[in-house]
Figure 1 (cartoon, one colour):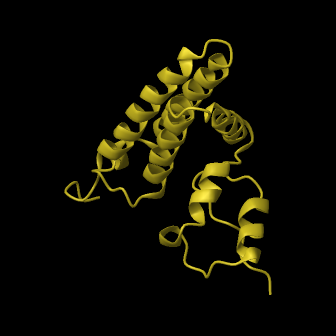
Figure 2 (cartoon, rainbow, N blue to C red):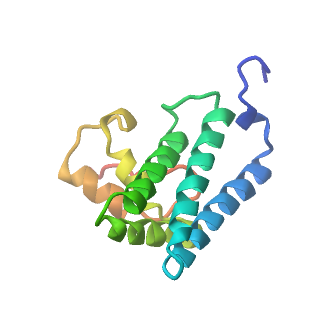
Length: 150
C-alpha cells in the first residue's frame, strides 16, 4: 500500500483494531452501567466518548464523512445531551442498551439510525428501507442492510 494515502488507522493490524474497538466500547458501557448507581460516571462517559471520537478523527485523518467516525461523534453528542441537558437523563438508558447489544450480539441501533441519513445511503428513503434497516440481522463490522427483495 502507498503510505502517503494510508491513514494511521489503516496501519493498525485488523485483529488489534477489532480488540481496541471492542475494549473502548466495553469501557463506555461499564461507565454507563455504573452511572446508574453513581451518576458522576455519566460525566466520565461524556469525557471518554469525546476522547474516543477525537481518537477516531485523528486515526482517520479527520475524515468526518467516514461512517465509524460519524457513529462516535453522534454517540458523544447523545451522552452529552443526556448528561448535561436538564430532564434528559432518560436518554442515557438508550445507549446503555444499545452498546450492550452491539458488544454482545453485534446489533448497533445507532449505526442503523445513522445509516438512514441521506449522506450515508444510496437508495431512496422509504418505510420499507426503515423496516429492512432495523430488522436486518446483527452484523460483524460496519452495518449495511440486507438487499431489497424483489
